[in-house]
Image (cartoon, rainbow over all chains, first blue to last red; front, side, top):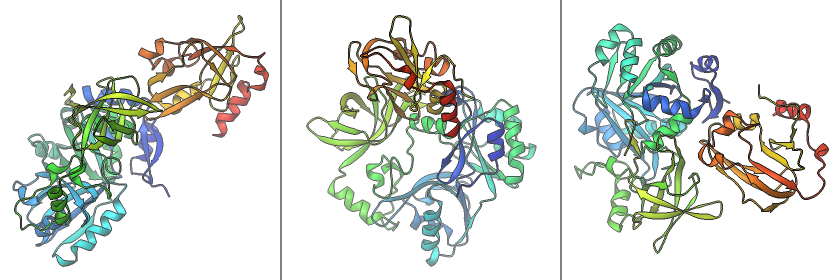
Length: 360
Length: 129
């Protein structure tokens, strides 16, 4: 059964081409994915991300609980509103999901997890909470709109309610703040500056229109994917999953090892994997010949071994094909990718291609 | 609504075919096909001079979303390919029936273009899907 976000009628009204995404009827584009991509890199675009799962965690034991649940350490969060990116792991180190958690105060954290993984995430989060003094509240009645691009903040501020504007105009990067029923994070999934705005469903459609009137163009899931890939951001289910650890998914930086006595779920397995020598790594690829890199294509590294493209696309900014790929740890700076039976040359790079509109 | 010019012939796999006066045929993908694919970013064209059988894959068209094969509606020899698509694949999005043509083919036998769908039949076909 397909679900609709509160903004579904707006998507249809704005000419969105609707597809099924993880059981949600979402716009893949509103005409041209390419135009929407460039709109975000050069100006401002908005995405309905209301299908994502917002979870409030509260109670006296919430910090200890999150220190156990997450591979990154919420103890790093000392200023109210500060956000942290983390993986939530299985005991064997496989990634259940990646998420953002905002620290609001000692008794309240807000977490945003993926839509496609909602059911298993909620089950896991609830199961792990049994031994802690923590209350879990999913917030399905909040809509969420991401406004992204070099002009995103300025244009969003011109459309936000006055009391919210006051709270967000000084908001620092990777911080969030609560303003009445609204919650604004200076976060995103495009490599551009901007906001992710959570608001009551009843106000979402009117706010969408206001953003549009302010010159923020609606963008679909298609552009969201090419933008995040250019920014070198992982997509759960493609670049990492329950079958891969963060260490082979380019997410080693999200694991906080110190203090050693913090016993987060998956720690022992990751420790062992690290002690044995991590066998693979997630890299960026830039195709040096004509063609398009796609997920699951075989990567051949001469004298080293084989790997696989985890996500690939044509980069609208670089006008070349780019990808994330999991390859043997010993891979140097070149490889080949098998596309329709032919081996094409690709350059191995750090997995970030574009930041704030510029090629890296 | 997608455009479906009446003077062309069509296939179920969304190629269009135009009979030229010199006996060759020009082949491309339909407006409906380019709409389904979205922004095209890469076109792999065949070698001029190659002989390709009907229903075999002859080109690959890739959009930001996905790769898709283009099939030969008839058997024949490739006499010309639209090389401007190498640098400007988006031409197919802008002009699928004119500037965005893919290949010209010399049919290997007298072509029965009548066996292919006409505009009405194709229109009905894409309405169903």
